[in-house]
Length: 438
Image 1 (tube, rainbow, N blue to C red):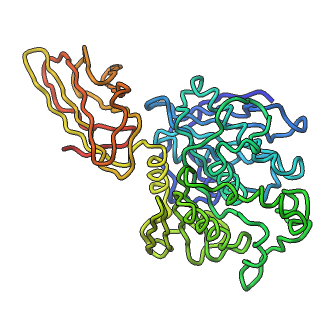
Image 2 (cartoon, helix red, strand yellow):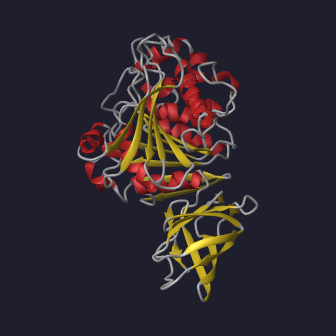
């Protein structure tokens, strides 16, 4: 298959796609122009003619670059080799926020058994990182998201960074397959405990030789515990793992809620970084896990650095909150404040900009953008690399000042020319987040 490029306005049809992936249309963002490159082969097809080694890439048509990347894989109980389906709906949400989105497919369990699926997602991540410059991606800011078996793939990719046995030899090699943050929805973890955790009203027979889990590992799960352990995300948990958020409905009929409880307890015991959102009355669908009817009722457990907090309704499962979590994990900052001071003389002026990290996570690498309302033109700058195109200005850190800890700040300045009015910019953005004015 050959990659296809198109520029698309995600309007109208996106509502249908959102519904197809279980996203309420009330969450749909405004229409946004994107460039979509579909059916990119990140490795040769196996078997020939299959779709499991293809990805689609959705890029915002405007905004700062290089861009953080969100990798998405839709669950199918490992029965489909088209897990990239539905990524256009995720792109409709995250492209306007400055993220590139890659929908990634992996081989189905009928085409190859575990660990092929993990080899595939890692191959896709390596290919995307190796080609980051070509597609204006930030190779240091890769996130991943998925639901059900896609959530399992998300957890495996997030927690097994650096595990040589799971790298495989598919496609591009010699490049890191690590991601920096993950979000998983209702994922299976320990297959051997699934039947015991089923709802009192019933559930799937996960021990069956024909169960999705048995087909994935290539044997009835209770007969091959060593292989099942290798397919368990908990096997790879340690204190150095990236932050992971996972969400699960307490009424999940297909994947027991207890699977996420096990994972959370494992991460807590290893002093890892996890946020577990447990949603009452929600079944195995994103539309139910994200239903506003549950807002304020979900149990949110957070563990980091061997500490824990548990609350009710402290984090509603919304796209805005997911974006904030991803930004924090990618060290882009979650909130900011800007102080701007001009020193004006006839026909020219100096500008001093102080950016303060008002969030709780560090910022590692920053870009500040704004637009002039008049004919201001920057001539020189210090403590930042500043580029102006028309009225749009982009200021990037000067490397030595790229890090801004929580509550800390950095400063840069510039000289510019101006005639007539010299109004203060209406808005400053730090890493695509609008900052408050000091």
